[in-house]
Image (tube, rainbow over all chains, first blue to last red; front, top):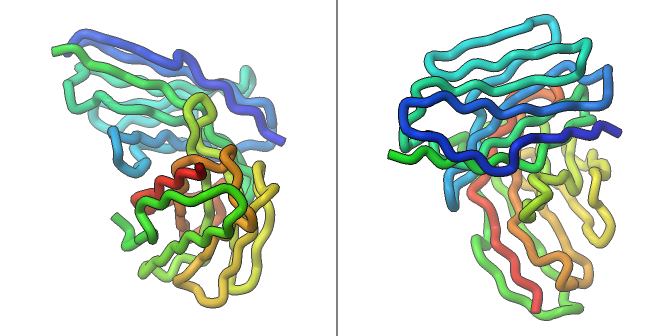
Length: 110
Length: 114
């Protein structure tokens, strides 16, 4: 099955700086790569996703890049704000084969 | 939130007892999932359903069973709870396959097995 690795496990940045979280996957058949944000004590919620026919996608301060050849994808958050503090999960899969990374705890220091 | 509720929200039980968690959705989504979330492991799929009475195993299905008798309800049963099943359990739904569409998560159930 798919193996999704996520780095780093924890990340601290100053408010206003950028944050980058990276994930790798093993199954070349994977074609859907979402990112979920989970605030403390809350449910995970989708923040952005990308499909294999697209190399980059942006939504305001958030962007995701995908390199299918190297089997890795990354989440970029620019101009970080304290409300960006949360755990972020990447995921990869196709059809009913779908796996999450182990999460990155992001802390934005005011 | 996509109209997904879970019950109970918290439960403490003893080793060896059966436990049933309920997920209820009002979105008429075809697909439903049960995950467990543990520190250092992220979200791991236990079982999923692709229609009424249609279910399949996920990554960590041992010790768990599921049932879906109607579109809106998906039940997760721990047949004989063990301490290793102490976790936070999330239900999720999606209109399409997990590998192709957004999943909507319920609020979670914190289960403690003593």
